[in-house]
Figure 1 (spheres, rainbow, N blue to C red):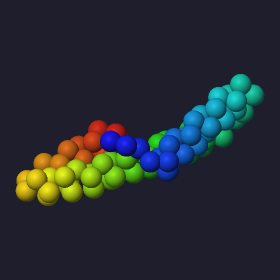
Figure 2 (spheres, rainbow, N blue to C red; figure 1 turned 90 degrees about the vertical axis):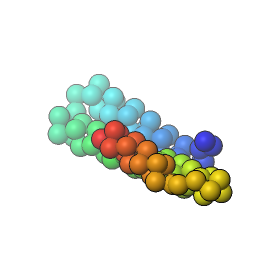
Figure 3 (tube, rainbow, N blue to C red; figure 1 turned 180 degrees about the vertical axis):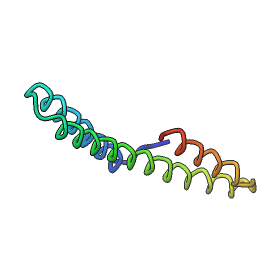
Figure 4 (tube, rainbow, N blue to C red; figure 1 turned 120 degrees about the horizontal axis):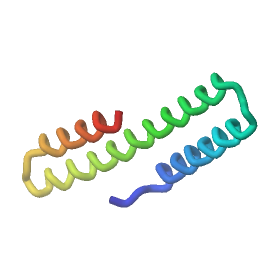
Length: 86
């Protein structure tokens, strides 16, 4: 699978957020502020996961349809990926 620039930008933002959290910890920022930022990191990672699965699912469904195969297995695999990511 080729990953587009949008998903790479999302992950670079997550990387920056993680660096920010580490800096907050080094500066001994309050626990609630650190946890709030970690929550934002988790949310951004979840969105990146959903985006990657959605794009991949779309590609796989098109390939399966072109080959004349049933797409239900591909959809089930995508659902399993999303469930596993939580």
